[in-house]
Image (cartoon, rainbow, N blue to C red; front, side, top):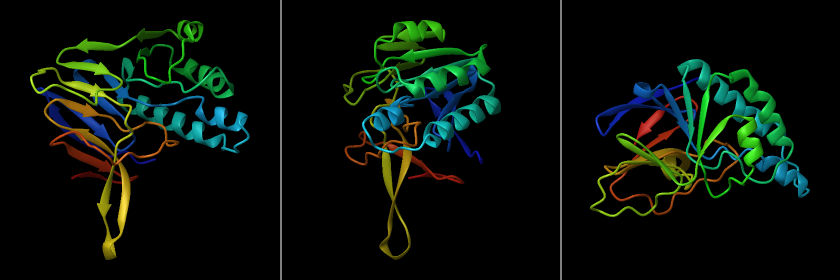
Length: 218
């Protein structure tokens, strides 16, 4: 697994973007990601759709690699840590997370996070219902509409942003990306088992697209 990094400055704070779909905030020793959707593959299998068990394993392997690389004190999940009801994938996550008992986990609830309060308490996950202000940022799951006079800087997810990159012979390649403007940073979906939304990017945003080996500023 190869990790690529690029540093951006948001509200005077350095943030490290990675090609592994997560951001590291050095000042807070915080790893930030969104849209993990644990339980989605098991939900599909329950419906008769044969999704491989390796999908979740690869997501957790990548998350473990990021934790080992940055050694964060806090894991901030900006919504949709879980996808559906309690299922086999959630059980596997419960076993996996026991390797990181010293890690504080914060979850800003997303539209897919169910009210599995017993699960959250058992895993020592602190729940934020709508948004969390941690200066100079506000963490929230979905912030697609921001008033021009709003002086906050939002870090969010939800939209699963993607962008087209022009290749050889007029070929267009769709890649996941971070979207950044003066008011917000939208994170890519952490789970590989998600689509990419290339529609309606934030106004005047810069796209940081990435592959397994590079990060591109577009």
